[in-house]
Amino acid sequence: MAAWLMKSEPGVYSIDDLARDRTTAWNGIRNYQARNLLRDQVAVGDQVLFYHSSADPPGVAGLARVARAGYPEKDPTWYQVDLEFVDKFARLVPLDELKQTAGLEQMMVTRKGARLSVQPVTDAEFKIVLRLARGGTDRSPRRSRS
DNA sequence: GCCAACGTTGGC
DNA sequence: GCCAACGTTGGC
Image (cartoon, rainbow, N blue to C red; front, side, top):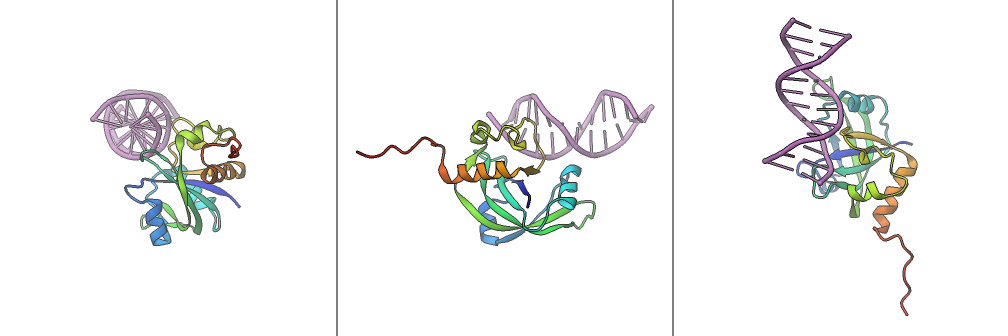
């Protein structure tokens, strides 16, 4: 099963909107490379890191799942998928932190000029992001109280 | 098919 | 709001 990172501007559609709606058609993507991924690669059940772009700070806000694979928009040049809400992270994992995390150096979103709004995410990267979402920034051992 | 002009994305 | 990094368009 594949994993993806999909971008959304929270001012337009946020993880909270997805939590409320439960499912949504993720559309409006006007880029051929992204279109091809939506049409040919993204499959039902794939996991999705829901990313807030043009936000302060930008970062991964939660988890979604692909509920329907690629199907044409009204203008059939372009494709959309349906997303189903899975989880809102207890804390947003900021882009800045992704950039500083070992193992995410190759992740597309951490690389300069990566504007693609659907990005493939490796299994290892996916797990690391989940760990960050759960564990917070402090990965040093918990100091025991005396 | 080249490439300049223009438009968009998105971090900062 | 700025602008770097792309992507697309269209004249030639």
